[in-house]
Image 1 (cartoon, rainbow, N blue to C red):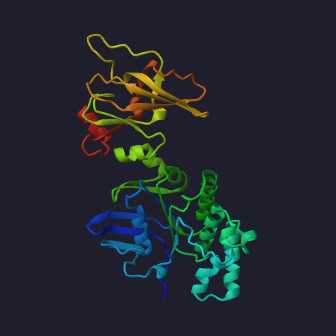
Image 2: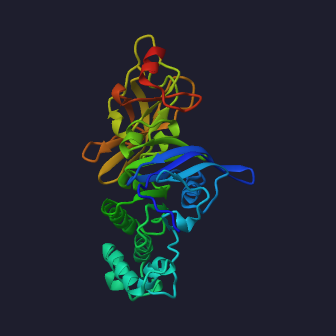
Length: 365
């Protein structure tokens, strides 16, 4: 008999997975609330897909526990976990019609033909597939095939949807449309979504919570706004955001032993070059002299790249500033002053890369 969760929360406790001595997931603990849309975000090879597969039962943990609805499911078969998996590759039967593909999970369960046909039509209608029910996958576009895969998952009415980069094979326009469809689908269904992606746009626009992963471990969990506004580490700061956060060495922006980060939209570009203070070879850290190395006009905004004159005898990364497209932009090679407002600064430990608490920064100063 299949296990069915009345409450579809997922709890991972000290979950670890190793392959031939290589640790893919390293002691991960995470609580995914009932009806949440949790995004597992990170670069290729960070362990996010392995983590998802352990939730679905497709991989056995080396250590730790997986609970769904408060019940430990480590030893429960995948088909009995009340979890539906949606893959990047669609995984449709090419010789079956759209209707037969959607019906298939119900057929395996022994649902009567009239009932499964009705449920398949309802799932197809939810995703705008009614007119394609008689076609085969080869007659559909990539976006339509992905919607068929979603409909096949929906028809099972699972407690948890596990989605492994389902939009990666779609073009940019279809990805945008399907993102909106998935958000609307989550709002309609009483299910928990766990969604794997390396695309931060998907994470920021779809998820109610984001778990950012790096090298098999979770760096931060929070709402999309939280991980953007208060990144817990340099890795999160530079993985979330396009362009990523500027992170400058200690002493360039302000006095202190920590790295300092600032989002491009918070950097002010003053076309009046900063003058050195009397008796000093450099300007005040908050008013930093720089040379423009690149200007990108993107229509809706302008990105200005400038190399800072640190005066510290060390190489400093290029700073990117985001300007309104209506503002006059400096020219390449022009000398400018970059201003870094104190209220928008983020401080990180120089050795660990972890966020420095504001109070600790004040004490250190």
